[in-house]
Amino acid sequence: MFQLTEQDQRFLLRIARDSVQSHLLNEPPRLPEVPAGILTEPRGVFVSIHKHGALRGCIGNIHPAGALYQTAAECAVAAAVGDPRFMPLMLAELLEVEFEVSVLSPIERVENIADIEVGKHGLLISKQNARGLLLPQVATIYGWDRERFLVETCKKAGLRSDDWKDGATIHSFSAFVFGERQFHLSATT
Image 1 (cartoon, rainbow, N blue to C red):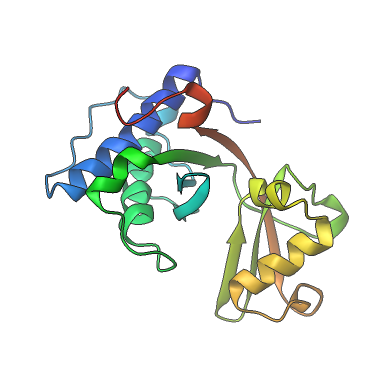
Image 2 (image 1 turned 45 degrees about the vertical axis):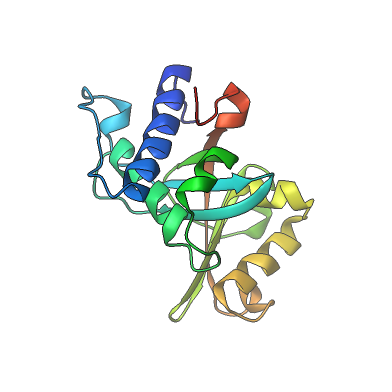
């Protein structure tokens, strides 16, 4: 399983918050130079933003072209101002939100749904031009079993709830998930 040091986790969380703050202040991003290593490898990543425990934005990239830390910065800004489910985050809200980062393993095709482990795997379901993705922690938060997870991922894609049984392609992945809450980080630390 993919792991990041605590220092790397804190670094990515700071990059996410600083990138959003720079964007909201109409300033250019201030990304530091990062030595070669895990943070400079291309990795899929999602950034989730929560306000008072409720989702406030979540955007990711499963096929990044750039370094993990750069993709995290881009996804953080997109989650803050580009998630179509929410109004763009305002600068005044930045003190009220918490950032969470999910670094993804490579995506693998699911041949047998019995191989899907709720709480360990996230799902990507596609059929024709429709595609939906749910992170591993979503099924755990809502207490879903495997079938409900498949149904909800189909719904996220805009598909019929049983399309996972009828011609949809199913992929899974795992995620290394960490957030400001676990480190007691805030906008001021």
